[in-house]
Image (cartoon, rainbow, N blue to C red):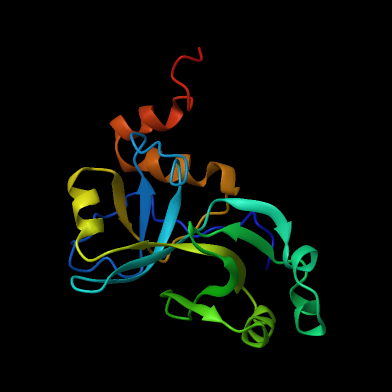
Length: 195
């Protein structure tokens, strides 16, 4: 499954997580976060610790390219249709492969920064989503906690329930399920001057 139409989302009643356990959670940009890079983004937070900072990958910003359009070589032949996503502003000179799937118990699983060979092998598994990311997002120690205190992000748990949605609607879908207030904000145009 490598079409960009399937993304990982939370249940209709998402849970806020403790700031001490942000690993493997989603960060949904608050509508007030309009810096351009993270505006209306959904980030899978792959790593987080109090003293080590955090790393994550934007999962709802396809570049419009596929691996086959960018990378040449036989090792990429079976990955040529994998969509490339803008993963974040750090190390945009690299393409990183990731695999996402649900195990038989319904637990969310992932492997990040895998080789092309590993991605090829995992792509053959039923229900496994392979993504390619250009760059990633990163935070220094305590930086993400400060941004959460400033309500720049809505932190959601990843659950065993998924829905299929287009990347362009993922941010709106997650935010609208968070609260009635956020639902209204998610329906607003990017430029509030537009009527």
